[in-house]
Image (cartoon, rainbow, N blue to C red):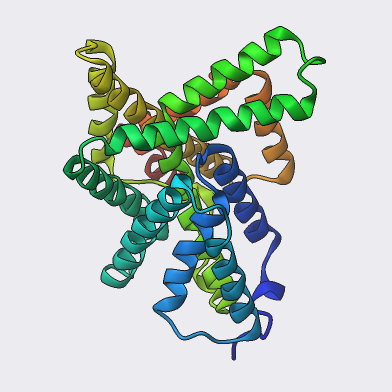
Amino acid sequence: MLDPTGGLSALRKSDWLRAGVLFTLVILTSTVRPSVLLAIPFLLLVGTNALRGFAMMSATLLAVMVVMIGTYDGMWYLERGWALLLGGCFVGLSLARPQMKVSDRALGSVLGALVLATMLMTLRPGAWSAVDWVISDRVRATVAQVISLGGGEVLAPAVITALYQTSEAQISVFPALTALGSMAALLLSWWLFAVFSGHRDETLGPIKNFRFSDHLIWILLAGLFLLFTRWSEPLQRVGSNAVVFMSALYAVRGAAVLVFIAGGISILGYAIIIFGLVIVPPIVLGGAVVIGIGDTYLDFRQRVKRLTAR
């Protein structure tokens, strides 16, 4: 029998912690509304299954409201179009390959949605410029609002300059950031769907098991090649986005290796990692990326299993 609360009462602390980390990633990396990225894939998942229980119906109604509200401008259509493309790929993969790990389905859906979006924009001249302008306008407006709320006359000029420099960097790599936020959103949408439907055993697995196809190293290498050959600004931008996206994935994979070797991670461990990211982010992220790339060739977790089995 399903939990009448949708499985919420049976969740462990680790389940909430993983969901919280994913939600934070969606907030920090997405250049579109996180609520839309979560709501549309969730609704598509609900549409492929029977709607049962008060919790599921309430969550579905809330998701519909999130999708419908907002100012009907270019950004409204852009973020919902992307979320629909993303959620469609995820649901399609879930139906076609139900035994595939949810993280692999999420990654495959993001890559598939990127390919489809690129094809659609290629068919419409000027589409990419329009998307770039809409995203740039949203990011710059957000920064201006942050400065205004913080008191522009109080903030030091160096802080304001740093905020604008960060926004320009975000605009340059917004496809990679959106892809990362979209992957986290798909995982969180799946978690919400599994929880509200009462299938707690189908929620997210532990971080220590996170890995992806070793062949994706070629995306990183191709990105580095385009970034450093400097053939043209568009190709260089493609390269920088590929490097940012894959480096983030390898950083997570490196973190998964460390968690596996340590035998788990506590709330204190999460706090130490966050502190390290704030104080020395290049060292922490760089080390995780190196470990993640090394795991592609050395498979550290398998080696640890062999050593402990002796």
